[in-house]
Length: 292
Image 1 (tube, one colour):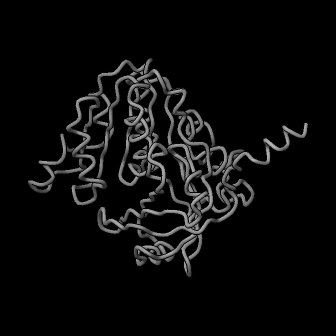
Image 2 (cartoon, helix red, strand yellow; image 1 turned 90 degrees about the vertical axis):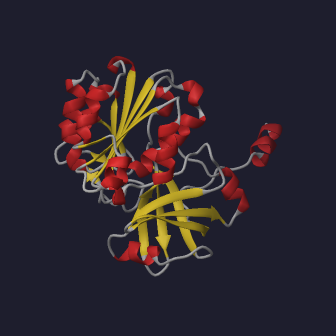
Image 3 (cartoon, helix red, strand yellow; image 1 turned 30 degrees about the horizontal axis):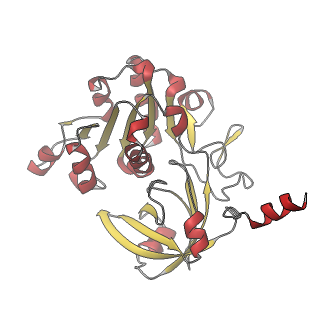
């Protein structure tokens, strides 16, 4: 008994997800108008070493003189040591964050939420569908799968935005398209110049790319993130093309504040986006009132 207790006491304790940890901004990258990617390291070396997450989870980011914001993690847990968050400037809190520079301090608590079922996806094809800023949490999933490429079968990435200027992670997405072990299809709402034509495979809505995917739907898991208004149409097109709705998962971030299911701000029917989500099966989006 004594030996068991000693063993327990000497075992490293997990990072406390409820405690805000001070973090240093190490890099700020402009991705598109009003969109920046921030890189952070925790000041506590032990926290920095132990901190881990699942693709699709989010953190609560405290911005000094701004407040606390729920933000999806865009870095992969396979690349430890740095936490990356992509933030669109919309509202006072994010305006304050967008003015911050490398060397400034923030606080991060989490990670929270369920994340994508990456272990269930193993041994299957994976279809990733991103619209606009929805590519941010899916970037975490993309690099997780690519870093564990041997665990997954064929991988498709579909990405749609309004125009080339609003494309995020441009250089990364170009390099992904050059890879031989995945297939990437990009679409813009409408071609307005030569730059648009060089970037995208075609113009139109994101749903137009789904019939071009050559995967066995029954052997495929689908991860979707984008404007919630698009989920109804994406889901309808996926089902039309034979994808079982039990194998389609969407990310739905909605007014999350406490991150632990206590405040009720993110309640949807009998579920809470912060603890039951933010990743939900497509079935939930169709059957829970006001989910999308």
